[in-house]
Image (cartoon, rainbow, N blue to C red; front, side, top):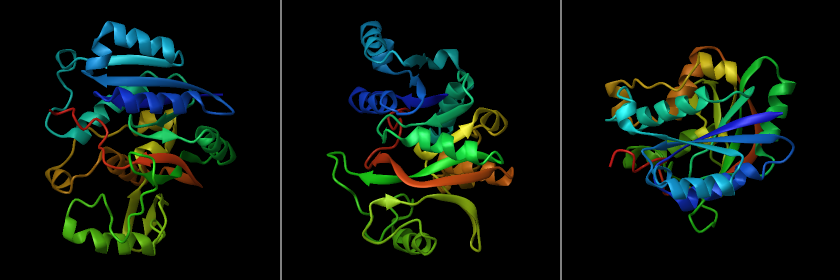
Length: 260
């Protein structure tokens, strides 16, 4: 069994190596890794790229030059990331596709646990895990009463309380128990990109959206939130491992330098 992992990157070779190592260390299956550079300086450099290829033979490195992709979004980072992720998915030839940002990492059993989950649930098109929050130096990060991803600071405490009521946050815990389902409050599409594993045919039918409305931009809707909404609206069944097998490092937005 082989899974393809897609990683967009811009210019963070140190954290990218951590991500690459975590994919190479997956247990119980083979993991191919497609790294999609967004006009990435260290992938443009032939010597650096060759060094990465030699160090990580399981990975394929593809650098995207803006001049060759005139339809790539320029003015909204999540839309640009969606475009890059879709390019990576298009290069996959495996039955399953997963995602990993260049500043995060998998536990060794992450992919195997999600593949097993989908194989036990043939009606499901997507599986996901939970994530453990860490600071850049590796210490556990506890949200401590606020949703750190809410775009409006004064609403972060209220968002935390709502998500805690659904079990996404647990006071005192660094584990985010993300979920994708309909609730009494409406649609709860809180699954981070790094936690996702999709059947390739599901991903081809429901790609990452590259068109974001004005309202989505005001709300700072990310590409993973937009994808999960699409999946829910399409009736795709999601299953969760209920295991925190993703190390999620706080303080960065995947490909944050892409629009600089």
